[in-house]
Length: 137
Image 1 (tube, rainbow, N blue to C red):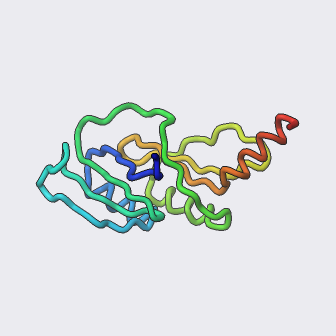
Image 2: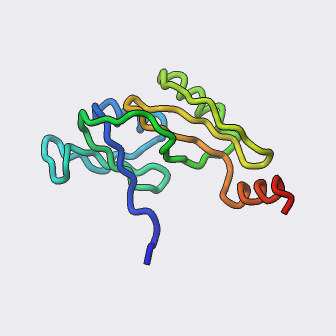
């Protein structure tokens, strides 16, 4: 029935500013721009990030910050380079949550519109193994 994630959508105040951020930080490929058309609810751009379709729509209806986020997988050896890019773009970082040994490194940051992103070095298998070990299972 479920085949996987089709796409992830973010609502932002400035499409062009967000497009520049995604291209610089995520090496995103822009594959669609609606211009002034609104085939959906708002003007939009589509990107490919790490093989995933990301839709971004422009609206003034931005909500407050939450822990809802998208985590992109990165290699541990790329963490410092990613961190430097985030700092160069003057993005606000969120301190990582408490971790147990073996669940990977996470870098959390907000984009310009309070969307939370995570760059994570671990895998699901590593996380489950770390949790089992912490639980003594």
